[in-house]
Image (cartoon, rainbow, N blue to C red; front, side, top):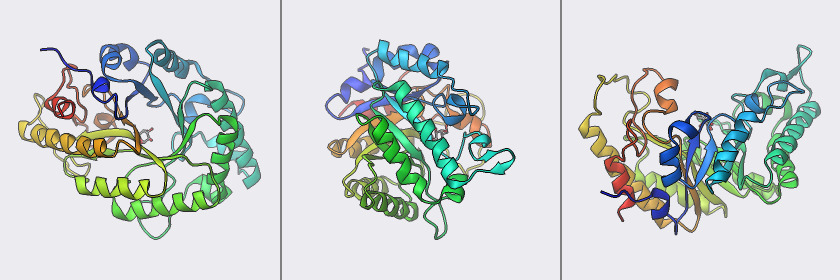
Length: 329
Ligand code: GLA
């Protein structure tokens, strides 16, 4: 049976992306070329990779990914410029002492200018700031070295600097748990404030690291409405839908995935893509965090290590029932 192309099925709706790494552009090339028209670097454009030491920039691996995108007529997202993770400690400290505010902002802006201009004009959007909002408690902003040293100003300054450097690219703020009501309110408050201050934020990236127990589709719909009402474009930037909640300690036996869980996953994928299609006017792109179930950060990153099977293609790169559910509409 001929399999339809995922990105062709969504041609009139939004781009379909995948996070890739320098291995998967070879090992998963066949799927990527047929089903995806956008890519994001899983790790290769993070601060520690591109700029490991003050005077050292290394674009080699990221350039391989960009070349793959260009050769295959795909768009590419830039991910990510300012984040508290995967950022080397020299960024925040110099000669054993924490940097001063102005000094840190200079480091940040030099990085933003150098990195964005290296890839310009090839990347159509950038995650300028990633995960700056606190999950719990009353503080809106996460206590990160960025905030502790530079105060809130780093956020607006990052967007202003990126806009000056690559005015052609859409600039995104990107975060996880974006459909959890408590965090959603904080993210909206932050975005509202940035927009009021005149920060050039064009869009919000809902990461979408979800699972078959949460979030509920209704909550996803409410969240899309809330973010879109700020006047921003939206993307789902890191979609994966695990068979297990992160807090679930279940360790599956090796072998095929439990059928009952796959059925729930299929139904949920069907429902959320139905919602995405309804909001095609505001959703620019939906990017999966990986290509197929044989290579997903979830299996390595969280305990217990297990097969989370969060994507639309199985370990053998065959389309799952969830693939058919999202392409037949
Ligand atoms: C966050 C980041 C991604 C990636 C994932 C885990 O969502 O935005 O770049 O690190 O965590 O792979």
